[in-house]
Image (cartoon, rainbow, N blue to C red):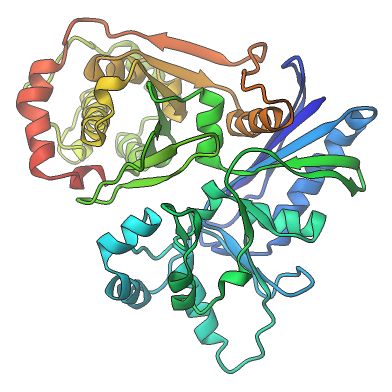
Length: 455
């Protein structure tokens, strides 16, 4: 058996092929290199990337049963005609609807009511707002759409002429009821589309198409996933651990027995998990982007940053509140960077406390660019008071999809222990090293601001 995980992201696609023993057979990456303002694309790009992966991997398919799982960007979508051809350019999730449309969604459903149903507050990147604007612009034209699809169901529509998505991608749209697990009819009607136009939703991990005839041989397609859920699968997240994603935006992801809501600041998106129970995605905002601005202000390259980090005194505990905008008023580059890392670590701890998960955690798993830092993981361990494990593997999200494929085919959830994944565990270096500063100074200021400083 072979298991293929394909991660179709916003800017690139990564894929990995592993065998039943957990050994890498092949891997690849495809870059889209979109413009910064590219919020509409040809949906066929998604399928083209799938085809490129299959073309590269298919020599290994001879005499093998192949199981493929897709993991994709959430919130991107396209409208298709009856022949499954795109009726218009696809919407990338990064695009925004007009504020007037968002305000109307909020007025008609209420912020808390909409959040309770969908796990989202009304926002411009969500599908209902974009669909409403699209259909209103088509009011006097012949509508050719028959299907509304997200990224994975676009690919299944091209492969099997049947759009099928998964619950984790469906709940990213803002059209899906996370409580009952179905498309919400009243929200679809608000967006001027019909429930029948939406794709079939698979709520658990299984083989959904068997022995599909393709130019690359017969393949089996298993349930797809949203990329955050695939990454959690690769990281082995359970109720006793959480994942800290450290890219342009930072997020705290985890699993729960029931939906985790945050009705004060709405930074938490709760949703159903593919395996069992629920998952959540809590945003800390554009932490990585702000860090890049901090480095740019002080003319610090990543090579220079590595040298600076070697000189950090991690026993130098703050004695005052740290504003995350430290680069605006701190002329010393090393001091500004260390303070920023400490402030963000405090925000991570505050977020986990507000979510009510901190006391149950035995480990925080750190994924992304900041995991390469020689000191940030240690600062997080010291501030949060729990071990922090960093994980480095280029196709880590695609690996999560491959794990889903393996489980769907065999019922075995064990990981691929033989893969060359770089892991490093940082233990708290001293008992309650940051405790007094966090409890008496930083946390009260974060609490006073609600969670506004996190968003």
